[in-house]
Amino acid sequence: MEESPLHAFELHNYIPLSIGGMDISINKAVILMWIVVALAAVLMIMAGSARRLVPGKLQNLAEMLVDFIRGIILDTMGKDGMRFFPLIASLFIFILFCNLLGLIPGSYTVTSQIVVTAVFACLVYGLSLVMGFILHGAKFLGILVPPGTPGWLLPLMIPIELISQLARPISLAVRLFANMTAGHVILGVLFGLAISGGVLIGWLPFAFTIAMNGLEVGIAFIQAYIFTVLTCVYLGDAFHLHGHDDHAH
Amino acid sequence: MPPSQDPFYAGLGQAVRIGTDLLAALIVGGGLGWAVDTYILGTNPWGMVVGLVLGVIAGIRNAYRSAMRWPESPQEHERKG
Image (cartoon, rainbow over all chains, first blue to last red; front, side):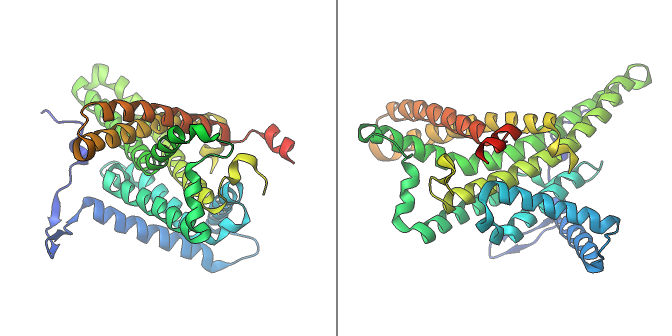
């Protein structure tokens, strides 16, 4: 039996649906996303409903999570960033749950679809652009000119800055997608080796599969964390134009 | 959230980040140059060559910037007060 290691990423429509020519079929990724949303919502609501002064296990976990996200926002954006807390917390929790649920054998990693990560990246980057123009008006274009650039360097610096700005949503989307996909391909290949190796030699790749799964749990956290931190950094850049270079605020 | 606070994983995360920063800027630079070549100026292949060079510069600049910014070491926190 030969199987491509990318086989696990193929999506088959369970219920074909389309509205006005747009394909909105229900497939595994969609169902997994529903499960993630339901699970995250139920867990967080259950954790928040008790409101005990001495928190129970679940409330403790939720408080740790909220405190962690709050720490990221305060570190990168400062106090004014807290108004984005709902957005950033939802992003972090959604991505984290997607990554973690994807590690359960037989389930599907939603974040290994570049469509999903690209939508998030465009949402975040678009929001930072819109907010920058609302807050600073045309002066926001000054983000293309780093502070202290001599005039004769402008024709070189503006294209470079333009490229590095446009690279932001792409690197955001590709990073999450590539990390999740690569991790699961490695797991798939190792497990395929374990199966085809038989009992005599197969235990070795199987042990590696288990070790890689442990590493992947770490990666799931890290990628959710990086996505959140970069979201904060990009939004923060739009907030205080050039504020990061001197840390004057 | 133990894993992301572990210095090993924090360093790993940063390394992974810088790799993609380089790659994304390269893709954007080359893509913009190619688009200028094909649709606007018709200067095949010079737009793409210039775009790739600018993309490399932008990528290195991005990587440098993110390396300087994050994550801050404890000493740096103290220095800033």
